Length: 184
Image (cartoon, rainbow, N blue to C red):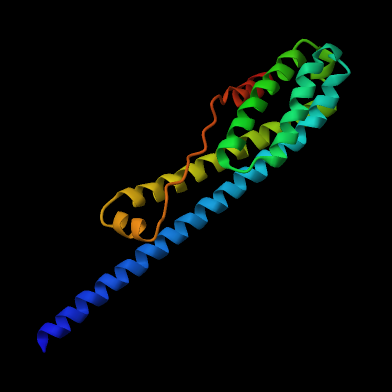
């Protein structure tokens, strides 16, 4: 009789562990989704600020039409991007285009002192800061989740319930953020 009670207690402990671990994975997945949502919102805000920045610069630099059309194409592509990797790549491409716009703007003192341009720079800087913060939160959530997937004994539960690793959000070059701080 004592054997059955001990066996029931062991089974109950294992069942509780499985339930808690499964719920932990679900909670971590939801944190990742929420964190990604924050990045997505800020990146969308960044893409929405760009046309205003381009318009304020356009009058000064007509010969940079290639950059303007590139930015327009990136905004269009952003709307149809379906996953984190696609959006990260579009973000990297936009950063390159923004470097060009910012570098060109440096050559025009009237543009740099324009109240509209200054306000757009500040908004873009704030957005860049939020993107960096959101990216850090997202990558922390993904790392925590992926670590649980790989460590024993939670990896057994993860594989039985088909939890899969998540991708980190990688930005190739964050110098655009530094350029905005330095130049503006």
